[in-house]
Image (cartoon, rainbow, N blue to C red; front, side, top):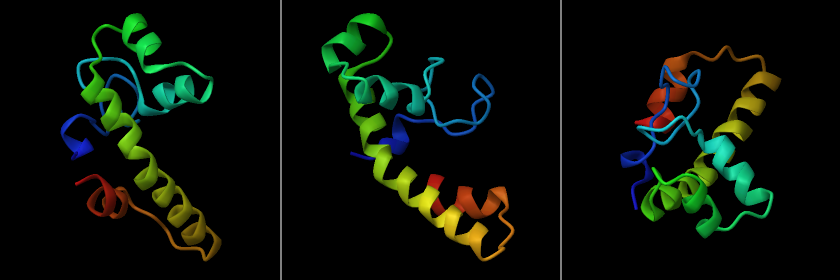
Length: 93
């Protein structure tokens, strides 16, 4: 599954956080629900605008988001200045 078909980055609705299109739900928020013990069924009942495939896309983003966070931490440690183009071109396209 190419999660990029189901997740937007940089929406005006929620301050540039990766989010599910046509919702106000960020990937971070939805991952937090799963971390808190919510089931897929509970999430879909509470947020009917979501689908199973959109939730799978949310979960599929996790490895790349963690990689981006780790890479950013390392670059900050060595003093590299990051630009949005560095992140966008490397991860989100």
